[in-house]
Image 1 (cartoon, rainbow over the protein chains, first blue to last red):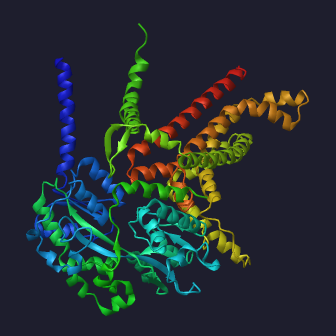
Image 2 (cartoon, each protein chain N blue to C red; image 1 turned 45 degrees about the horizontal axis):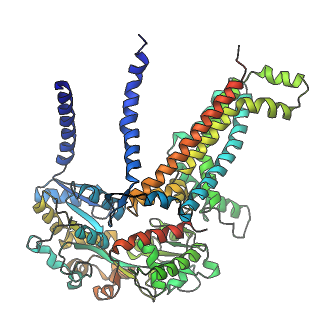
Image 3 (spheres, rainbow over the protein chains, first blue to last red; image 1 turned 180 degrees about the horizontal axis):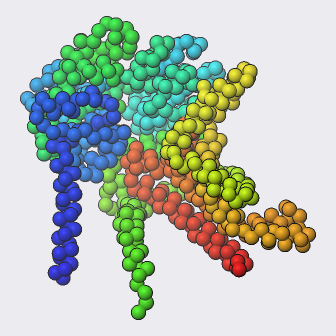
Amino acid sequence: MNRKNAIRRTMLGAGLACCASALMAGELVVSNWDGYMAPDAIDSFNATSGHAAELVLHGTNEEIMGKLIASKGKGYDVVFVSSPFAEVLHNLGLAEDLDHAKIPNISNLYAQATELEHDPGNAFSVPYAWGTTGLCYRSDLVSDTPDSWMDLLTPSEDLSGKTTMLATDRWLLAAGQLAKGYSVNETDPDKLAEVRDLLIDAKGTLLAYDDTTFYAKLVSGEAELVHAWDGWCNYGIAENADIKYVIPEEGSDLWVDTMVILKSSENKDAAYEFVNFILDPANHGWAAENILYKVPNETAMSGLSEDFIAQFPNMGIGPDELLGYEQLRDVGEAQRDYSRTVSEIKAAN
Amino acid sequence: MTDRKPLYLMSPALAWLTAFMVVPCLLILALAFFRRGIYGGIEYTFTLENIALVFDPLYAGVFLKSAGIAGLSALIAVIVGYASAYAIAAAPARRQPVLLFFAVLPFWSNYLVRTYAWIVLLNREGLIASMAHWLGYDGELPKLLYTESAVVVGLVYNYLPFVILACYAPLSRLNPEIAEASRDLGGSGWTTFRRVTLPMTFPGVATGFVFVFVLSIGNFVTPALLGGGQFQMIGNLVYAQFLTANDWPFGAALSMFLIAIMMGLLTLQTFATERASGTRPEAT
């Protein structure tokens, strides 16, 4: 009995020691996509604030969501997630209700960025970057300038086998939903079935599904027309000026990547300071200039040069136009139908 | 008293396997019987829904498709691998280690790098296409990359060394006098191979086949990279349930079936091997 207890105590002690050291490793844990902020952002935050922030990376929204839901948010202080996922964190009660007095730099945001449908008034999320999803193409190789989602989904013969589409559930479906004139949050099963059939037909004409290297395929000429987020199209444009971006006439979604502070954070003041630090025009502007994504920070965006916007025209899409597009929203239970629809598309021959 | 030494020696490995293999597998098994929460996560109410869903034609189809791709890859790997192993075993003894070394050389590099190498080779602006153009071919080559064949090629390439090693072992141990005896008794080269060599080395063939099949059917990297995400194999489906759909219970149910298939095959292979070695004459 005694021995058993001793063993139990030792094991508990060892367990605590290992977990405690993991928790102590960083006073403030920030999770972001790789390369989505300045490489020295954390160091300069630590240097100016005296905190010990630590950056961890996630590859996808879903990956970090899985961890946050499993741990009830513990172990993280600030996370970067796309808006539908910020909504989920809010609905699950994991997102901190923001005290704007602790984020004075929030006043740098465009007025439109405080009216976003998923979170009017930025009650629980602060937008970090935003943009559109459209077509990125090699203007020197395509015979007709694309201007419709159907140019991607039912490509002309010479384009067949030279297009790629995003494979992430929501954006893959959005291409079909927009082409059909439906909401990007459509949940009606019949309409989803129509979208599925359209996307299955489109699959036969694709070179590949590609979420990460589509711009490289454009640069090499392997692909000529790809489904792309505007910011990533810019990576292609930076390497080849013949690459252009267009929002199809049927429209785009408005995607918004946000910063969320976790309710479970034990370092909320530091977390607020970090969010405020990112919203500093110099830091937020760095993201626009180097990551080539639009940021919803008016002060930062007004600092961009005309030459820069001329080189990357989609950096000049203004907040009014952006707000004209529908945001991807959390679709709740219908997410199951979305997943199944995507499985049906991927499994089709 | 029986000798306890084997038990003591084995216990670290057993403890390791239990803690980091058996327990996690049991946890996954348990997960398969719970419900998925609206936002992912797990609702602890018992359900058989996930198990039933595995047999849904959509997902059962993915299983069959994966089995087809894995079976074809295993078959090709066995044919190519057996031939290579035969050639190595027939080479002068001092050259065999060198040849084996070359056979397993690809294992020294990372799996991802090896798979990416195929992208460099096969893509439309890649090495093969450039070579064809350089040799004066003007037309457009058929699509090589992002096809089912590319997936099979990638799987065969990556797992071929396993087959060579698995077949080389029994081939190299084969007593050449047995083949001689067969020939002396009037068996042609082909008959000798079919009636003597192949049956005696069957355990290696079975091991190689099952290895490639089992590794291929659960593979998700190769279909994602060489199939351009267009060919969903069961591994990709499991990956998607855990990492994008956040439907862990269904992902768990799928992986349980996958594990069951693998265990079934490995058991069969063990039996086949034992039966084959049972009939093998004892070397003296």
